[in-house]
Structures are given as structure tokens and as C-alpha cells.
Image (cartoon, rainbow, N blue to C red; front, side, top):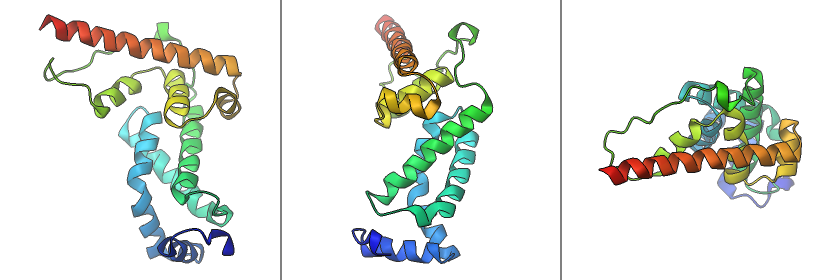
Length: 187
């Protein structure tokens, strides 16, 4: 296990125990990363139940492939890549990756107060309302940091389609932000 020598000693110990099938170590690894990874999964799914399913399936793959981790980069980053791939597989399975905007029903935000400020949770709700294809490309590009060539390969689409989906996602988000500002200025 010399390939993970750059990891902190507690993480090395944890990995060794997980590879031996130690259930307590696997639970500890899950507890250490599940909160952060649930947030990753949530960005790609329509609801918490779907995100939890992706998280669960993702951790199954983490434990199945833990012997493939080479210690190149942070363990959390390696787990994140698995979760993103699992979320993309979930979306493909749902067979609704690229939905036409015209077919979507418009959703209104439920504001408890029109004067509330945008925060991360509010912006995440806006992103969640994007059509699945737009949301997926937006997350991969703007949040995960993939380029359009990588996104195209991951989603089996062209670079131009990726760019187009991102552009449309940004336009929809900007329109929602502008709409919200008009509403708040009236108050």
C-alpha cells in the first residue's frame, strides 16, 4: 500500500481496514464523506430521495473499487468523481437528459418573504429547476470544473451541444434572477 503514502496516517489506516472488509472502517469512511457527497449528488437530481439513491449506489462502487485508488490526489476528490459518474448514470437511466424547454411546465418560487436575500440554498433551488440537460452541463462546467470536451465525452454529446446547454442554462438563470429583482423592487 505504498501508493497512498502521501495520505494522512489516519486515512491510510482507514483505507487499509476498508480494503480488508472491516465494516466499522467502511462506516467511518462513509460517515466522513457522505455529507459532502450528498451535496454533490443533490446538484444533479430532482429531489433528496434520488440524491440518496445516487449516494448509496456511489458508495457501493467506492467500496468495490477502493483497491483502484492510487493515492494520486485527495481521496475525497476520487470519491467525488465516482459520485458524479453515478449521478450521470442515474440521469441517463431516467431517460430525460435533454428535455425541451417548451415541454416543461413553469415553476414559481415559493417565497416566504419577497425581501429575502439570495443565499446558496436559494440559488441551488434555481439550478434544480433547470431542465435536466441544462442543469447537468451547468453543474459539470461551473461547479465541478470540467471543460466542454470532457463534458461531451462524459455525456456522449458534442462539445458544441455542451456549450449550447451551458449557454441556455445561464440564460434561464439570468432570467430568473432578473425576474426576482423586479419582484423585490416592487415591494
